[in-house]
Image (cartoon, rainbow, N blue to C red; front, side, top):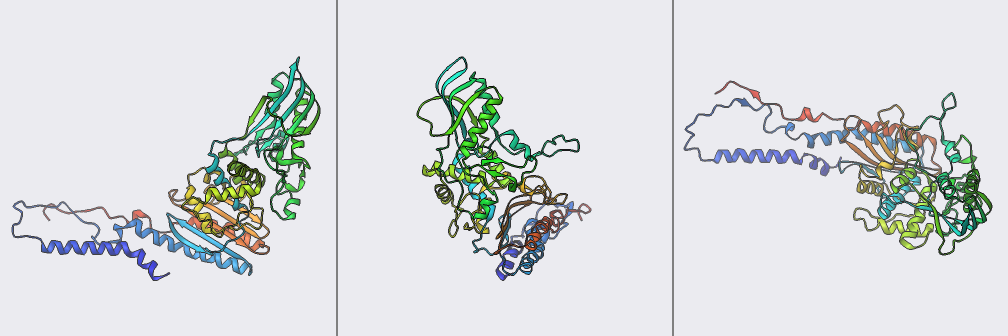
Length: 499
């Protein structure tokens, strides 16, 4: 520990000593020629000397607690290198604005899904927490006796989580009797069935023309700047302003594994085909489906709003939705740069976050919204700064996965002291493992550690990954220091009157 750091820690005690000495000198120099004519009898004596560590409990407890956690931090950092020699890591941990460690502060590393923190925070700043994106239906033609003599347009508004009920069912957990167990945490979605219900309720029973999908809000680039293996692994469905079920046409009926999914060649056409099926189930006859741009005008027949932005980012961050993050980036590109593309979106992220005084984007590389791009680069101090600006009680922070309970951390830290006390964004790619967020002390909920951690290697091994979970759990020992009550001034000790 540096000399400067030691000096800073004991400054409050030194100040107290100086003040006490000054007071003693003043008392010695005071005019005492005329003593009080009234004899004063003190009923109590001081239980704690004037110059005592007990008189600065919060100041003393902090450095003791900070020192006590250092061995666990050091053991983790040395363990990373012992586990894999080519690993590069950064680790930043803060509490109450004090820095406990800032290892690898200048390393700009591949963040994987920690990149979603930038995307979702920028989306909150740009759109606000209540913003929604609408999927709309327009009819062109006349309606008589339930027959629409013309076309029906399904216009995509960039809702990332527009789904059908059979997509949702792959996430169902069932008991031994086969009944669905209601989840404690529900992913925010919008149901295409609701839109079909509204169309059927309008009285239309058949369409002489076509049901046409309009995806012109965004460009037609179906993926970001990603490695081919990630596209082949279905890490994201094909991107479109009009899509249902994240752009997949088939998936595991009761298994959400990405490897079981089949991508739609034309996501907008897939969306209208799914809606056509739902309409037929409701007695509405559809002759054909196609894709095209809606002409000006038309009658708005039905509208389906997405969940609000606060819930969209909850879905993106807790369950680490790559598709959702990429659609939000295109929304940002459209809003800021009038172009619904990934390139315009990442430029918008920089434009939105750049003016925030507490954030410096110097040295950062932002190439997509989800973190699938292995050309992205972030630093741990930047992630800490972003989370600090947002705040622990913010909408962003409350959108994070919860250890042992929700999202990508639901199966980690189960039945440990970290269960329910860890709020973090996970990140995993072949060259990356990462975790950033907040850890609440199980002993004192007012104590919150803020941390960011990234490790990179050509291929991060399992031994490195295995160190992360026990390290986070070891941090719950903070603050391992004398209770403030122990350091508080003692109660006055009674003494006989006049003693």
